[in-house]
Figure (cartoon, rainbow, N blue to C red):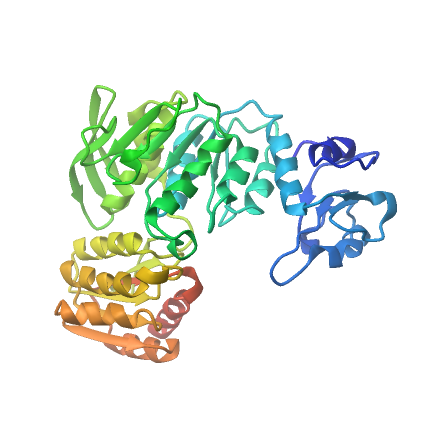
Length: 452
């Protein structure tokens, strides 16, 4: 972060407080205080940062943004909302950089799309991106504060669980271009319908200039209906002829996908080091974004050859004579279907799916979980092990689809023991659940047992 004066910060957050001096970092966690930083006291579900304001100053913070008097005299900047102040300050800071910024959102695949877009943009520019899951109203501004003089571009993912969240974030991010990957049913419990989810995702346009382009998945039945006023639209896809970036002749292998890509009148055959039709969409979106900022499409696909999945997102791990697909970061009906398609495409003696609950699906939860079981059957899965109360419906769907072996568990230890006893060399095993289910604990148990 380049240094800012405290009086600049106060003006940015609409405070009349007058402070001298400057700071070169912003912190919301007293465990990460750096000498001379600005601490923003955020009230969360479990902790209130105001209770730690004095500790922050004692640990080295020069000043605190807070909603109430924390007894710090002239070292506090008082505001109505520290959450909004954090975004306002980040928006001011972002305005100091005249670099291309790409905003990304969507129901499924937005983090992978972000990672691929970052890989493409990094082939030409020193590019900043969100790290980990810093895609909310705290993580996005903290990411923007990492900008410095060396950065030449940024790729910022924005997630949400309700209305107006993306609107507030995008006004700080001010994207020069945006990608919306798709409209699924994630968070439908809070947003009511796919129409509501579409409206929430389209909030990304609120922080964009009228002529800033938006990149949309033409194969998504909701996005193809969008007609954003003044914003040029670049479509990508596999099926829809409106796609400017289009993939065809797709051949998926265990760890590779070959395809022909068409773009702006040109075409070329490319090979990507990851499986799955869903990843083809992500790659097309990344290439489309790169093309807006001077990166030739074939150069973009060349850059994607170095892409490695982040965290626990469909990471393929070959060990103990088996193939494990670790995909425990999150789950929705669409991402479950995509993961099961990857499992189904694998050349394995047996295909085993370990499926956990999908969260925040509201009224569609029961049918959505059941459909995942049917998808397992359609993809030739030989065995389905489920974990969680909701995933009992997945087991029912798998049984109705005549999957050979189906087991349901409410206890991870019991699941791990039976799975370990069942596994054989030559198996391919998918682990997939919502993040809150912590299904990676089963993976760790399996690996530990097999290493003995």
